[in-house]
Amino acid sequence: MYYTEDDIRRIKDAADGRLLDVADDFLTLTKSGKDYVAICPKCGAKKLSVSPSKEIFKCWSCQNIQGKGALAFLMKVEGKEYLQALEYLAQKFNVLLDEKPQKKSKQAKPKKKSKEAKWFSEEVFQTAKE
Image (tube, helix red, strand yellow):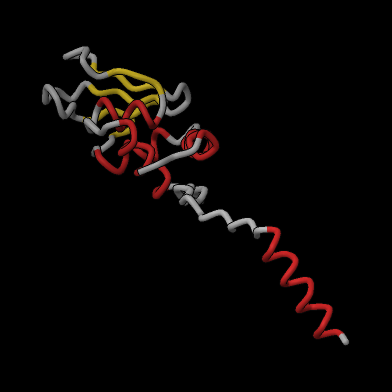
């Protein structure tokens, strides 16, 4: 998949503040105070904390999982590559992407007319006018 810098900016803007929405797609979240907790997919302990107000997540058991934002969540918790995570967020939040630029094909340059061809076409044009 190809993303322009503008595409990436729009995807990140759409996902900003939406960590809980993304985490809820993959984890069974339980409210715990102002945060949410879930079972960590890496270590299996119920110590994965998601804080929607701060937009951060962290496993307090294995310390392998921690980060900020929906994009980081997809990459660290779900193991997605950067482009896969962008694609998921673009689809989830219905971000319209720019058209992929087409490769420029070499177009044949028009051949220059010789002096004789120019003279002949001018003469034919003049005769046709009369």
